[in-house]
Image (tube, rainbow, N blue to C red; front, side, top):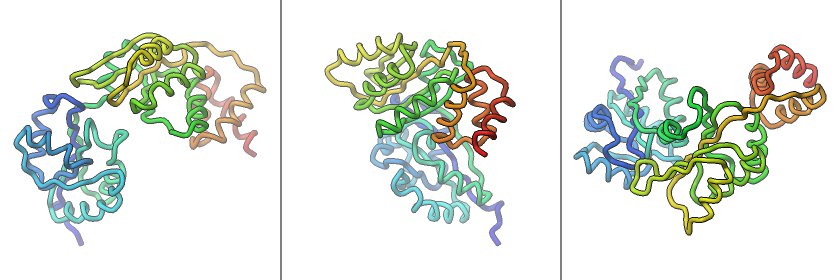
Length: 282
């Protein structure tokens, strides 16, 4: 039987999202001390490791091979070796590979420890000028148009500041869809955070779209922060039934979670929504 006290530790290490100086002393020490570094892109990560004279053994662990790598990594951890997981930028498993590895390793009762640091969502939110007391991280939206639009319709009633990640190729399309479905809300587009061509565009969604359309080309990953719904809603019973039925068909939330979300969005008693969902699903 394995002795859990001799197992190694899996460290989830945040790395810079642009500027190489945005890394903690602890992260550097961990990357030097572990036996193995599992990186999303070894070629990309070598630049960072070389900068800090880190010569730890490097292996790949990315979106397409993560599942295959898990047994190998668990075997090494059970031998007592420690492993650091890093992504190309920011915190692993946040819209990046890693969560499957963390889930499986933790089930084996092997320690998983975060080494906190950079994250584009939090960095951008802190300077967005939008409410920060409550926010909802969405990450990348679906690429298929119908699914994208349906997801945005579901998010329309959220009162929290919404955080989206998007590629430079699709950012204009996302802003257009948001304007159509949400209306012209206040927002902030953060591009190339901490890098040489760092840019923040604050204002209405239409203002942001206008600025994007003025550019010859858009480069760099984008983080978009959109103000939540601030309107007080009045809704009759039939409209509420329609919304509930639509949400049931498009969300994975259970009855309780859906009741909570809708009651919050429309400022209605959760019990009332819960009972209505039960009646509509019997």
